Length: 293
Image 1 (cartoon, rainbow, N blue to C red):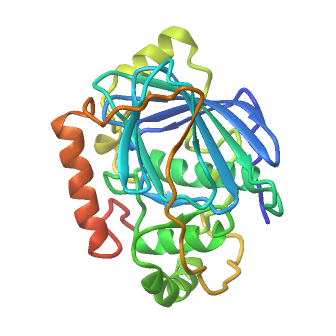
Image 2: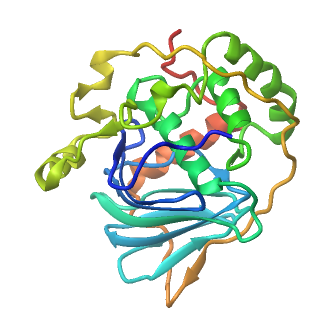
């Protein structure tokens, strides 16, 4: 299985979800990053990592979490928040200002393979599609790209929507069509130092300027003005197998004296955006994306 070619010290940016990352540690089974979330930033969709444990420590701002059916906020001084492997979770900037969080992605003890490096490869693919304006406002690509990504990276991520039965029935045929239409999550053009999501070290002033931009903007200009950019051609076949069934709904564990509080800092616009996203998710494959072929 292909893994990321990114190295420690690299910077990545997803202009659609509003995430900026500096890679601090890149190993096959352990990846550590400093992550900044612009106001309004959020990960693309609730999901599960069967082979990975995620640990978060908020440096500045507030991070909202959804896990185990409940919402919580972590702030500086709350200690390390751990999301166990197999837990359905979602998270976002829980305040009105920029949030800074240190994230450790670690292979579960019994997990085979190189799951952390595989996860970083997934991030490169998803964030590069965002930088190419090939995703919807939630950061999700079209159904063909989603099927191709879900199949290729099924060892490190499972999406919670559409339902597992729908994924099992549709993602195989859709992934085959994706392969024939040039949608390859492993395409070299989506990964490494020249990936669309890769940015130069912005420096302190450049980072501040980048984070001050609204979600959906990039250092080189507004994505909406640029429109979708060409995609790389497919170079590898996807290996298909039945989607994994079942999921374990766990809880976010606070390590140290966490003292989580109910979500309150997300603001009405953020809560409304999450509600709209869940409504779209409930319909199946989500809203139409900006992925013009």
